[in-house]
Image 1 (cartoon, one colour):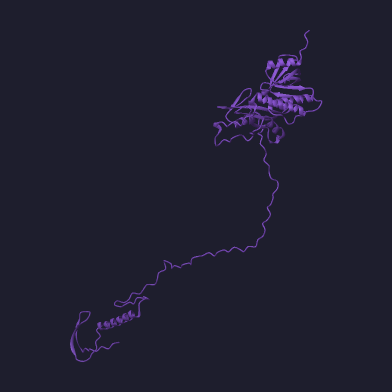
Image 2 (cartoon, rainbow, N blue to C red):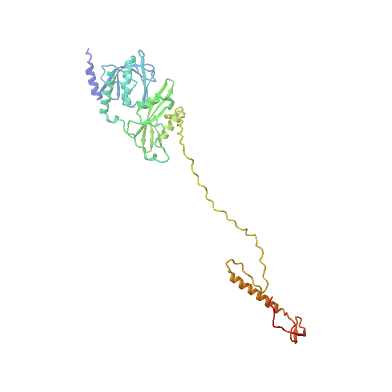
Length: 383
């Protein structure tokens, strides 16, 4: 009977076959959700792949799990001493359960797997400092071996979505890692249960959600690929939508709106603080200038007629009411009026019998002629 090979020899053979570095190994149990019982395996974590062997002396693996495709990892119960550890790995085509009879062994396996999946060490691990150092060394080696694992900068928004009417990103988008998104959803369920985030692959996105099931709350991650035609949700049957907002809408409709986007609640003030009143300063009252109003002008109504001016008799001189007329002009006008009166009297054929008789013939207004003897006088007294 051939002797049992040394474990180092077996490890070298496996390293030659897989061409991957060994990070962790040990016994564990595994089953699919469709299977009833767990099966015993010897597991080796090489790179981002978990190789399962029927025994620790087997050269070739029986099964393998690509941890780079894990969408979520959920534990049935938190870490407890003397209680077996069971957690579920969600893969694109199946869900696998891993079981460790020892709680410390299960926590160690969980630490290695989650560090590889999330590209960072979980903060809630119940592990010794020396074990965490191994995780740091593994993460450093894995980043050197595969530089693309470094989380790239946020991919640019596609050109056909860069419009004025379309917001840049959905309100539930956060520039966080997978682990950070899962932590936000687990610690703040009141804020929502869907987070959109950048993917580890350039120019792609991922969606992390926390969903309630019969076994409790489950964390799941979905890949969203950016293409020239839109965004492809990587499901069993890929779904293409036009925008990231449509990605979010698709998940809300498929879950019958039992999920809601993760939005950080804004704080509200609860106190009203009054500013102190200003100090009293004796200042003179302001001087208000009086309004300058133009004096009101009184105008005579247009329809009010002045009394008619009496017409002067014919031949009369009318003295104009000119205040500027001097006294000399007034006197001349008065003398002229008196002379006019004298002439009118003479025209009235005023006769006075005096002196010598003289036969004279006169014709009145009716054309009748008569004779009379009159005596003319040459001295007419002035009135």
